[in-house]
Amino acid sequence: MNRFEEFITRIVQQVGKKEGAISPIMVNSASFGYGNSETGEGIFEGSVKKPLYARVGNPTSAHLEQILASMDGGIGAVAASSGMGAIAMATLSLLRAGDEIISIGGLFGGTYSYFSETLSRFGITTHFFDVDALDAIEEAINTATKILFLESVGNPNMRLPDIKKIADIAKAHGVVLMVDNTITPLSVVPIALGADIVVYSTTKIITGNASSLGGAVIFRAISEGEDKLKGDRYRDIHPFINKMGATALIANAKKRALRDFGMSANGFGSYLTMLGLETLPLRMDRIVTTVETVAKGLSERGFDVSHPCLPHHPHHERYLNQFSNGCGTIFTIDLGTKERAFEFLNHSKLITITANIGDSRTLGLHMASTIYRDFDEETKEFLGITPGLIRISIGLESAEAILDDFTNAAKI
Ligand SMILES: *Cc1c(COP(=O)(O)O)cnc(C)c1O
Image (tube, rainbow, N blue to C red):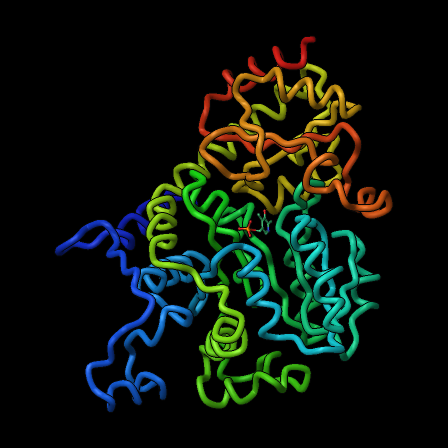
């Protein structure tokens, strides 16, 4: 049984209930009555497990969190208002002024700006590396390094990291490895490869139908014996480890980020996300196959396509050996110039032109004029943004229909 088969059984069983309402129960209250003062005290103390206030937890989001944690082998998860909210929660709960991040691969434009512009205003420095610069990454680690941050697939540069090797570096130096797995849920299981924290924009393939903006952070358990979080580097977390043990990272994220910054998911958003999540394994299974068929078909027809399933891609071997469940819904086409790229997108009858990815519909976007328009030339080169680059996110349509449409759109 492959992972998609296994999870289509598990997820539908976890989303639905056997008794009463089958569809997840949607709670949208901002606050919750405690009944009496003793219970109120117990809730705040943590001895009574009942909702406190929607900023720090919602029962519908808790249902979603439970499913996402089990999907990734985490001890728990915290849902967020967006993918950026999830990244902010995960990072801000571990960082203080003077700390450093090492960012590897990718990088999604929003995350790049967050690291390079926003966090730098608060005295946090990020060093950026290509996925294969392993020696330089190791050299850059020092006592201020708190997070190695990794994107499971370069969006949109399509470079693939050797996650296991990078996790081994993180382990050897006692540094937390955080993986943005937005593009490859189920296909890549970061915690099994040695990651400590996984972040998602659930807006993308997890919901899959543009109905809800959301995010989530999944945490691994703190080990009973030795654990890198027990090292001196993470002394800020030690009070949580002493009190909560295995679930310390969840308590830390809730108290240090969610409570004070308020990037909280809402009940309706989490409900819609679960409806999407229910069919995630089926959609992923179909789309990773369609992506390969379309990328190969377009390449044969003379398109300049970047996807690691193609033999000329620098990470083709790594794709075959380490990405047996595919690497998500995206690939890029380079049409040479902005004009050709615009013509192609405008002539396609099938592409929806938008900044999203991972939808049921095939989406496309010219990179340099949109997400990366404010970036300087050097940064664009590092991120692989060329003048004619279009990012495609394949949907549920038939491979044949997509190939026909793209071929027609390019004939001008
Ligand atoms: C979209 C995206 C994000 C940000 O998610 P939002 O839900 O839009 O805030 C982060 N990382 C990756 C890889 C993404 O594609």
